Image (cartoon, rainbow, N blue to C red; front, side, top):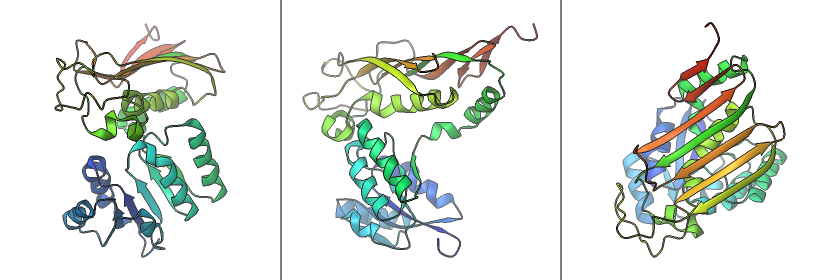
Length: 286
């Protein structure tokens, strides 16, 4: 920290960085973006001019060498999260990484181990925990209003919202389809609501039923059907060691009534609730 401000370095300048992360950091009085890095010199120069950022690099390790940078924000394709995070931690930087943290469980474990070893924070960009309705619900849960929450049904479903960029549809870049992109958000939120219990077992299935079809159109434009090699629908059942369970389904392309359904319904012994609607079902107080 210098002059009362955290120095920020951002790796990746795609849509999520330019649309959310950079504007978000710019709003903070105690943070200053010092540098950005991306493989395209043209793109980093655009970002430098658009957001008035002092330094830009095409090699992210040059960014990591800057001593004034305290926090590294990683906004690159999913499969690159692991190596970049490990490098950032080795340079003794705190890390905020876009979801998912990594595409393999063993990589997440190594990232967590290293963050503890070097005593630096590692955080996944799971922003739904910080929504006002999420914070309010979590307080009610922790006060015991719902009793024991023993089951949840969680959806991250879209009728025709498939992101067409290669970083979402090619496994070598994304690691997976909707489960890795939007499913992680609703799963993380549900897991947090339920108190983050230890996992006992997981069963799941993935499908690619619509994404290869030329008669299926997306609201976000056309995608390369030949290059598409991830699932377009995923479903799973999670059992925790405390006996609680979660049913999770997510999709980019689903034949459903609503345009989208991003929700989780919690079933407790004293009350139940659907997030984010806030509708409570209970026999309390009549």
